Length: 80
Image (cartoon, rainbow, N blue to C red; front, top):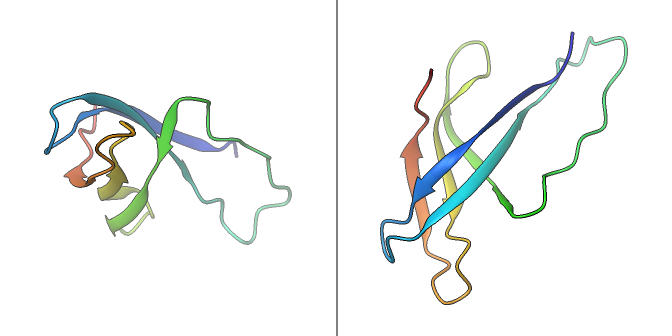
């Protein structure tokens, strides 16, 4: 099973600047092997606030990438 990577864009609730975010869904402990992944340059890592029964995030939190802002933003993932 390959890794599931979620990514998207969000507009900061404070400064209205758009930033890109990234989330790597953790692999199950019983996986035969684990893949190595890095957060792509220029994308904010996120923290999961709420997830479904399959460990897929529903609500996440990320800090604004703008150096003058840095406001934490909490938002739901737009599942496509």
